[in-house]
Image (cartoon, rainbow, N blue to C red; front, side, top):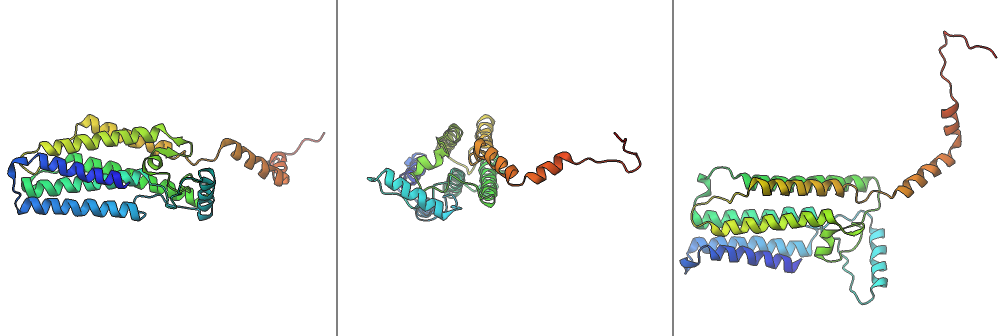
Length: 268
């Protein structure tokens, strides 16, 4: 995660410097913008590595510790990370928060007055997509925790990319496509920021790219809701066990006859 955050900071600085390379030495506005972006980026990186800001919630500490011991026994040469795994939705929401806020600070202080510009559709749509995805994902996690489900999130972190790309069966396609479209949108957005020479107007992405990003997030959420479903065999076994443990209920329900008190019952 530290390498990813460092790369993000370098990308923001490179794009910013490339758009104003002819204005050296930098004035106070440039220094203020770069200082603010640096503080936000470094703070985000530190919190991401050393806190649960971007990590999943552990619902069963005993299962978590048991999984950590199992991993240590299987890979004795590896030092097991005792932290919770990274959450894909939290990572995406955090990255877009840093990118859009940094772009706004840079354009506002260096390129012009952002207060004079109209509402930016792309920024609102992107923040709406990933904020909504994060909220929906959190609600799913809370529901699974309340149901006492076995969750693949109760496993120590396997590394940043392994965490955000993996479900209970390992690397998954729905997570991969979501990460891919997020990276595409980030690269296009930062590239368009670097092309702005004057005026504080956040870049607009195409409606097609925004729609694909939204569809990607919706697909991820639908399939994420099934990640921690119990296997069909376990559900059938639980139903069979419940039926055998209380056979009288099943018999009474199947043999009960409802009659109309006003209609006589024919004798045989």
